[in-house]
Length: 151
Image (cartoon, rainbow, N blue to C red; front, side, top):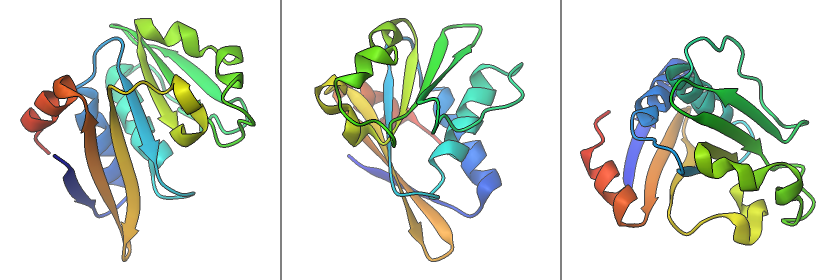
């Protein structure tokens, strides 16, 4: 079951990321779909700041491909695969180490077979001047968590 939300502005996108943070546990993968400028990094910034409040800056890892944050409960891996040339590069940027924490993946379509079947897909788009964000749970566990989600 897909859940859709309208986010009026950047502040609401940050709040949405913080709310999704409450669903996460080690081993989770969250795949963020959508074009340039739709709010994927803003969402991730809200999520990371909720899980790791001591982190002040959450830059887009467009050029580094991955940024790792040490949150109190588990590490958070923020991948931006926009510049990835091949799914084989996933191992080179540390994908195999993410099972102990949470992986947030922008441009997940570039991950190929590395993206697990059991994950939370979040699709970002625009509806007029507002963002339209849909949660698409993949797997029973994600479906159960999304059914409990309130925003």
